[in-house]
Length: 185
Image (tube, rainbow, N blue to C red; front, side, top):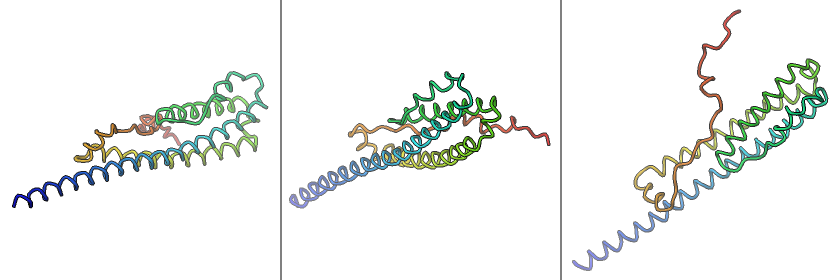
C-alpha cells in the first residue's frame, strides 16, 4: 500500500513536470508565431515605405519648394516592437496624407498617370497591411488568452510572460461615427 502511494505521488509529479514543460513550450511557440506574423507587417510597411518614397520623387518634380513636407517622410523606417510598428504606421499614414494634401495644390501632379498608379499601389499595400495586422492581432489574442487562463497562467508567470499589446488602428473613433458624412445628394 505504501509503495502504491509513492508510485502514485511520483507519477503525479512526473505528469506535472511534463505538463509544465509542454505548456511552456506551447507558449514559446505562440511567441514565435507572433514574431513571424509581425514580419509580414514589417514587409508591408517596407513596401509601403518604398511606394511613399516613389510618391515623394514624383511630387518633388512638381513641387521643388516644398522641401520640409518631404524631410520628415524620409526618416520613416521599418518597425521593431509592436509599439514601434504602431508609431511607424501612424507616421506613414501622416506622410501619405501630407503628400495627398500637396497633390491638391498641384492639379497636374494629382492627374499624373505615375502619381495615380502610385495611389493605387498605396491602396493595395494598405489592404495587405490591414490583413497582416489582423493576423498579428489574432495571434496576440490567442497568446494573451492562453497566458491568462489557469493553469497556463502559472507557467506564463514563471517564464516572465506578460500580455502583449495589439497593433492598433489609427483614428478608429472617427471611423465609428457616421454623423460626419455628407448626406446631401
